Length: 110
Image 1 (cartoon, rainbow, N blue to C red):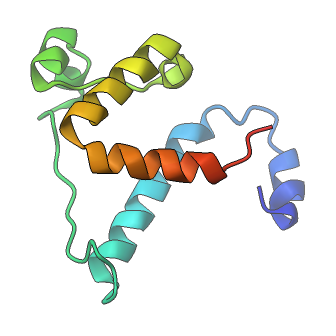
Image 2 (image 1 turned 45 degrees about the vertical axis):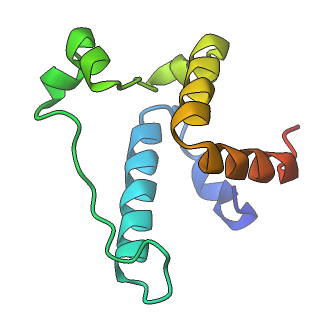
């Protein structure tokens, strides 16, 4: 968090409801940036949808058929889910996994 934003965040007791808004905004901002920026390696990127509706997204059978893993709530930090996703990326996108490991090795979590 940027220090200059700390006073505003301090006025919000329950920040949990804002998590989805921030995640969705960040995704939209990144898509807009890369779609329009002339030097972006991802220029012209467009979002697409795995499911045709929210109800379909929460149908575990449809999600499994689509090869989709929900990362809602605590699922993001569940070791078994993280391991399964890492193995999938290792199989399907080994160069991307290598890049993730490079970035992670430079990030200090503590």
